[in-house]
Amino acid sequence: MAGKKYNLTELRAAQQEWKKVLEEALSPNNREIFINRKKAVNMYIDGASDKSIKQETGIHETKITKLIEKCTRIDRSTNEPYGYAGLLPYRRIEGYKREPGRGSGATTAGLFEELMQRYPSLAVFIADNYFGKKETTLEKNMQIPALHSKFLNECRKLGINDGDYPFNTASKGQRSLRRYVNELKSQNPSLAIKREGKDARQKYRSTGKGHRYSTIPLAPYSLVQLDGHQIDMLYTVPVTNSDGSVINLPATRLWLIAVIDAATRVILGYSLTSGESYSQTDVLAAIRDAIQPSTP
Image (tube, rainbow, N blue to C red):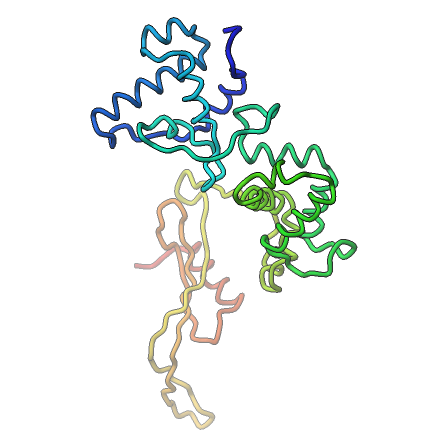
């Protein structure tokens, strides 16, 4: 194990995120080759000796390191390591290697976080621009493409070269930037909601924040619910005039206010009203109907 080319601790951490392969979809011959390569790579990462790996898989040490290099190469289309997909027979692996010293198992998300740690001012720059801090930008609700362009310019100002991250990736770190911004939004909901419309901000203020806890009814009558339901229908309502005569006026809506047992979904009581909307009197009538003895 002392002669291993790769840092096994970093490889083990990266191995957990490697892309899996649907082995059943491979042809019998390709499946056999893939499984043998995968076994050799896993044995290497587990610390097995080169001799034992060659005895069990027939793969030489130099071939194993090339296989691991394929696994750790970055797929330019996804900006993620090829993982076990790099072991597929006859598959051409293109991409770029990690920079020396970064560790073969680091992900692009890890590289982005490392960049933020190395340049704390860059993290502040991203947050201030995205959330529209007046001292930083006059642009309202900056979108990711515009933020990404400003982000790259700021990286150049900090002295980051074209051969370094994020310039050495296909998207120049845009995907990682998007993920980073999404995390910022979840961690700062009060700032994120300011980017939304008036209706969204009003709903946010009225509903509050945090976790919502609901009581689970364990038995009948332990929890009741009350709600009004509008019924669209056409009917007439008798109205008595001042002279004592009665006329029938058409109505187009009816409100049903129901008191429901949450555990059994039984309607305990109700009230009806034909007004434009139901009132507190209609609600109290439904509650009274629910608690007074019922008459069949």
